[in-house]
Image (tube, rainbow, N blue to C red):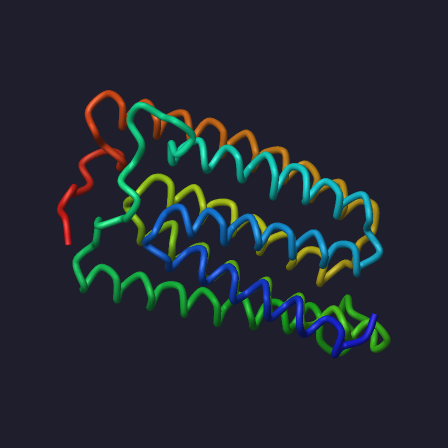
Length: 223
C-alpha cells in the first residue's frame, strides 16, 4: 500500500462527501452518498480488509442507500418529498457553525498529529495511512457542519452517515485494519443502517401527516 495509491481514494472520498452534503437536490445528494459508500468499500479493500469492504458495500451503499431513497419517496410514493431543499438558516448562524467546525478541526488535527506523529501509533513504514487521517478529519468536519447547519431531515441523515464514515476512516488511519477496529466499524455500520431506516420512516411519517420535513420549532421558510 503506497502513499500515492491512497491519495486518490482519500481525495475522492472528500469530494464525494462534499457533493453529498452541499447539494440541495436531494435525489442527487443520495446518489452521491451511494457513490461515497462504494469508494469507502474500495478503501477498505485496499487496506486488506475484504470482509469490511463487503459489509460497507452491502450495509452502507445498498441498504442505507435504499433507506435514504425510501425517505425521499421516489418509488411510486403517494407523497414524495419536494426534490429540492429550500430551507436555509440565517447567515449569521451559518457563519457561527463554520467557525465552530474550523475550531474543532484545528483541535482534532492537533490531537491526531500528537498521537500519530513521531513515536505515535503510525510507524514510519505505515505512512500510506496518513491520507486516510486527513480525509477522515475533513469528512468529519463536513459531517459535523452539515448536521448542525441543515434543517431538512434527509440531509441530516446524510450528514449522520458521512460523519460516521469519517470516524471510521480516522480509526483505520490511526490503528490500521486490525480485527478490533474492523469489529468496531462493522458495529458502526449496523448502527448507521438502523438509524437511517428509523430516520427515513420518521421523515415519511412527518411529511405524510402535515407536510413537514424538519423537527421541532425549526423554521419552514423558503428561499
